[in-house]
Length: 149
Image (tube, rainbow, N blue to C red; front, side, top):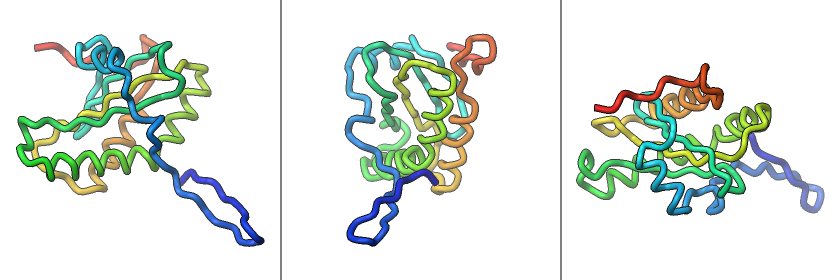
């Protein structure tokens, strides 16, 4: 688990990773590009990842979405989004390290929940981890985009 330790008055504290407002995708043009299938997409059940590199972004930013069509109650959608954000928060450091190692510009990520029922945190976390491991910016080795139906 990535975090940092600080020392205050001789006592050391361990800070857990956070998901700050600056890490949330809010640029409307990038969001439109993600939903208009202009990005690269792949599936790591129960998460569908769509990403696009954008010079408009100063750092990698993430948008979490859950379909209103599949989950009618807002409380269910919010719970799923909370699970996904928590899993991303804990494992984003490995994604950032890969991005820096490849000297890749910041990306806008859409984490879209495609499951039909609410899964446990462990299952959602495994999906996020698989998605991070599967991500690759190079076109030949990138995951094959999903076929449009």
